[in-house]
Length: 112
Image (cartoon, rainbow, N blue to C red; front, side):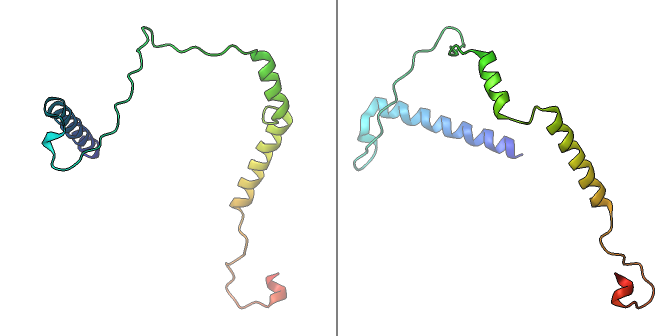
């Protein structure tokens, strides 16, 4: 429903804009009482025949080598260490911090 409402709102907005632009072009600013200051229309950019853009040429092996030197996330040792840390964190998360299943009153020394 929200998507349908959004489509309907966009349609109504565009229809209002089309009608407003048509009457503004035909009658000028005489439609509206008072001074109307409209922004200038943006310049229309020429449309390219093909939908491609130019990518500046770069030396990919050199850029990748520079990237690899600045990051440790691709080293085997770092990946293994992160996996082990994650495994240990998951094991600690499963352990109970306190033993709460006592059936009798205990002293502090017994609790420790």
